Image (cartoon, rainbow, N blue to C red; front, side):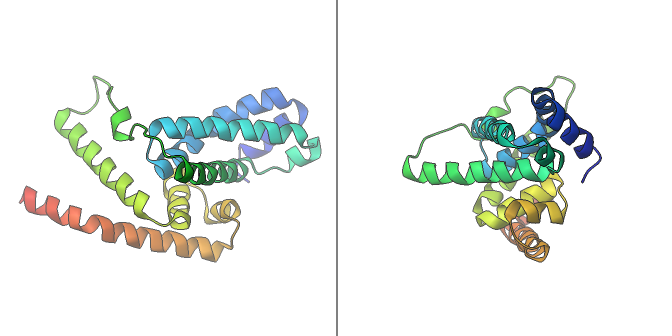
Length: 195
Protein backbone atom coordinates (compact mmCIF):
# COMPACT_ATOMS: atom_id res chain seq x y z
CA UNK A 1 0.00 0.00 0.00
CA UNK A 2 1.45 3.40 -0.94
CA UNK A 3 2.06 6.07 1.72
CA UNK A 4 -1.10 8.06 0.88
CA UNK A 5 -3.44 5.06 0.93
CA UNK A 6 -3.71 4.45 4.67
CA UNK A 7 -4.70 7.99 5.75
CA UNK A 8 -6.96 8.23 2.69
CA UNK A 9 -8.74 5.00 3.59
CA UNK A 10 -9.18 6.22 7.15
CA UNK A 11 -10.76 9.43 5.84
CA UNK A 12 -13.05 7.41 3.58
CA UNK A 13 -14.09 5.27 6.56
CA UNK A 14 -14.81 8.20 8.89
CA UNK A 15 -16.29 10.76 6.46
CA UNK A 16 -17.16 9.49 2.98
CA UNK A 17 -17.65 12.90 1.36
CA UNK A 18 -14.42 14.40 2.73
CA UNK A 19 -12.50 11.22 1.99
CA UNK A 20 -13.89 10.99 -1.52
CA UNK A 21 -12.84 14.57 -2.25
CA UNK A 22 -9.32 13.62 -1.20
CA UNK A 23 -9.50 10.40 -3.25
CA UNK A 24 -10.33 12.42 -6.36
CA UNK A 25 -7.60 14.98 -5.60
CA UNK A 26 -4.93 12.30 -5.15
CA UNK A 27 -5.87 9.94 -7.99
CA UNK A 28 -7.70 11.97 -10.67
CA UNK A 29 -4.60 12.69 -12.74
CA UNK A 30 -3.53 9.02 -12.80
CA UNK A 31 -7.02 7.87 -13.78
CA UNK A 32 -7.16 10.52 -16.51
CA UNK A 33 -3.68 9.65 -17.81
CA UNK A 34 -4.63 5.98 -18.01
CA UNK A 35 -7.91 6.69 -19.81
CA UNK A 36 -6.29 9.20 -22.16
CA UNK A 37 -3.68 6.67 -23.25
CA UNK A 38 -6.07 3.77 -23.74
CA UNK A 39 -8.71 5.82 -25.57
CA UNK A 40 -6.53 8.31 -27.43
CA UNK A 41 -9.22 10.96 -27.03
CA UNK A 42 -9.15 13.77 -24.46
CA UNK A 43 -12.91 14.33 -24.35
CA UNK A 44 -13.55 10.60 -24.07
CA UNK A 45 -11.00 10.30 -21.25
CA UNK A 46 -12.72 13.16 -19.40
CA UNK A 47 -16.13 11.51 -19.72
CA UNK A 48 -14.85 8.09 -18.72
CA UNK A 49 -12.97 9.61 -15.78
CA UNK A 50 -16.17 11.17 -14.50
CA UNK A 51 -17.97 7.85 -14.93
CA UNK A 52 -15.14 6.11 -13.05
CA UNK A 53 -15.42 8.41 -10.04
CA UNK A 54 -19.22 8.27 -10.11
CA UNK A 55 -19.09 4.46 -9.97
CA UNK A 56 -16.44 4.62 -7.25
CA UNK A 57 -18.57 6.92 -5.08
CA UNK A 58 -21.66 4.78 -5.60
CA UNK A 59 -19.71 1.67 -4.62
CA UNK A 60 -18.18 3.34 -1.55
CA UNK A 61 -21.64 4.27 -0.29
CA UNK A 62 -22.42 0.56 0.00
CA UNK A 63 -19.12 -0.35 1.70
CA UNK A 64 -18.80 -0.69 5.46
CA UNK A 65 -16.22 1.44 7.29
CA UNK A 66 -14.09 -1.69 7.77
CA UNK A 67 -14.10 -2.41 4.03
CA UNK A 68 -13.20 1.22 3.23
CA UNK A 69 -10.23 1.02 5.62
CA UNK A 70 -8.96 -2.14 3.87
CA UNK A 71 -9.25 -0.61 0.40
CA UNK A 72 -6.26 -0.29 -1.94
CA UNK A 73 -7.51 2.92 -3.58
CA UNK A 74 -5.19 3.25 -6.59
CA UNK A 75 -5.57 -0.34 -7.79
CA UNK A 76 -9.30 -0.24 -7.01
CA UNK A 77 -9.82 2.95 -9.03
CA UNK A 78 -7.76 1.68 -11.96
CA UNK A 79 -9.84 -1.51 -11.98
CA UNK A 80 -12.99 0.60 -12.18
CA UNK A 81 -11.44 2.80 -14.90
CA UNK A 82 -10.40 -0.25 -16.95
CA UNK A 83 -13.90 -1.72 -16.65
CA UNK A 84 -15.54 1.60 -17.56
CA UNK A 85 -13.27 1.80 -20.62
CA UNK A 86 -14.01 -1.82 -21.64
CA UNK A 87 -17.74 -1.18 -21.32
CA UNK A 88 -17.35 1.99 -23.38
CA UNK A 89 -15.48 0.09 -26.12
CA UNK A 90 -18.30 -2.47 -26.27
CA UNK A 91 -20.86 0.33 -26.52
CA UNK A 92 -18.88 2.13 -29.24
CA UNK A 93 -18.76 -1.02 -31.33
CA UNK A 94 -22.56 -1.07 -31.24
CA UNK A 95 -23.03 2.72 -31.65
CA UNK A 96 -19.95 4.46 -33.13
CA UNK A 97 -19.53 8.24 -32.63
CA UNK A 98 -16.90 10.79 -33.69
CA UNK A 99 -14.74 12.57 -31.09
CA UNK A 100 -11.68 14.83 -30.98
CA UNK A 101 -8.27 13.13 -31.04
CA UNK A 102 -5.71 13.73 -28.27
CA UNK A 103 -3.60 15.85 -30.59
CA UNK A 104 -6.57 18.12 -31.40
CA UNK A 105 -7.15 18.92 -27.72
CA UNK A 106 -3.68 20.43 -27.29
CA UNK A 107 -4.54 23.72 -29.01
CA UNK A 108 -3.35 26.07 -26.27
CA UNK A 109 0.32 25.92 -25.29
CA UNK A 110 1.95 27.98 -22.56
CA UNK A 111 3.83 31.01 -23.91
CA UNK A 112 6.95 30.21 -21.88
CA UNK A 113 7.05 26.61 -23.18
CA UNK A 114 8.93 25.20 -26.14
CA UNK A 115 8.95 26.90 -29.51
CA UNK A 116 6.98 25.85 -32.60
CA UNK A 117 9.63 23.38 -33.79
CA UNK A 118 9.77 21.57 -30.44
CA UNK A 119 5.98 21.57 -30.18
CA UNK A 120 5.62 20.03 -33.62
CA UNK A 121 8.15 17.32 -32.79
CA UNK A 122 6.47 16.57 -29.45
CA UNK A 123 3.01 16.46 -31.04
CA UNK A 124 4.27 14.19 -33.79
CA UNK A 125 5.95 11.86 -31.27
CA UNK A 126 2.78 11.79 -29.18
CA UNK A 127 0.65 11.05 -32.24
CA UNK A 128 2.93 8.16 -33.21
CA UNK A 129 2.85 6.72 -29.70
CA UNK A 130 -0.94 7.07 -29.36
CA UNK A 131 -1.43 5.37 -32.75
CA UNK A 132 0.96 2.57 -31.80
CA UNK A 133 -0.72 2.07 -28.41
CA UNK A 134 -4.11 1.84 -30.14
CA UNK A 135 -2.78 -1.07 -32.22
CA UNK A 136 -1.82 -3.14 -29.16
CA UNK A 137 -4.21 -5.85 -27.96
CA UNK A 138 -6.32 -4.69 -25.01
CA UNK A 139 -4.53 -6.60 -22.21
CA UNK A 140 -1.10 -5.44 -23.37
CA UNK A 141 -2.28 -1.85 -23.90
CA UNK A 142 -3.82 -1.65 -20.43
CA UNK A 143 -0.76 -3.27 -18.82
CA UNK A 144 1.72 -0.97 -20.61
CA UNK A 145 -0.26 2.18 -19.81
CA UNK A 146 -0.79 1.27 -16.16
CA UNK A 147 2.87 0.32 -15.71
CA UNK A 148 4.64 3.01 -17.73
CA UNK A 149 2.21 5.95 -17.90
CA UNK A 150 0.43 5.69 -14.56
CA UNK A 151 3.49 4.22 -12.81
CA UNK A 152 1.83 1.32 -11.03
CA UNK A 153 3.80 -1.66 -9.74
CA UNK A 154 3.44 -5.02 -11.45
CA UNK A 155 1.46 -6.26 -8.43
CA UNK A 156 -0.99 -3.35 -8.71
CA UNK A 157 -1.40 -3.89 -12.45
CA UNK A 158 -2.03 -7.60 -11.78
CA UNK A 159 -4.73 -6.63 -9.29
CA UNK A 160 -6.36 -4.33 -11.84
CA UNK A 161 -6.15 -6.93 -14.61
CA UNK A 162 -7.25 -9.78 -12.33
CA UNK A 163 -4.33 -12.00 -13.31
CA UNK A 164 -0.99 -13.20 -11.88
CA UNK A 165 2.02 -10.86 -11.72
CA UNK A 166 3.92 -13.07 -14.18
CA UNK A 167 1.16 -12.62 -16.74
CA UNK A 168 1.34 -8.85 -16.33
CA UNK A 169 5.12 -8.89 -16.77
CA UNK A 170 4.67 -10.88 -19.98
CA UNK A 171 1.93 -8.51 -21.22
CA UNK A 172 4.11 -5.46 -20.55
CA UNK A 173 7.14 -7.08 -22.15
CA UNK A 174 5.21 -8.13 -25.25
CA UNK A 175 3.50 -4.75 -25.41
CA UNK A 176 6.81 -2.86 -25.28
CA UNK A 177 8.32 -5.21 -27.90
CA UNK A 178 5.32 -4.64 -30.17
CA UNK A 179 5.55 -0.87 -29.67
CA UNK A 180 9.22 -1.02 -30.67
CA UNK A 181 8.34 -2.96 -33.81
CA UNK A 182 5.54 -0.53 -34.67
CA UNK A 183 7.66 2.56 -34.03
CA UNK A 184 10.95 1.33 -35.57
CA UNK A 185 10.02 2.34 -39.16
CA UNK A 186 9.15 5.83 -37.93
CA UNK A 187 12.39 6.14 -35.96
CA UNK A 188 14.40 4.94 -38.99
CA UNK A 189 12.63 7.51 -41.18
CA UNK A 190 13.43 10.28 -38.70
CA UNK A 191 17.09 9.23 -38.69
CA UNK A 192 17.19 9.46 -42.50
CA UNK A 193 15.57 12.91 -42.48
CA UNK A 194 17.98 14.33 -39.90
CA UNK A 195 21.10 12.97 -41.58
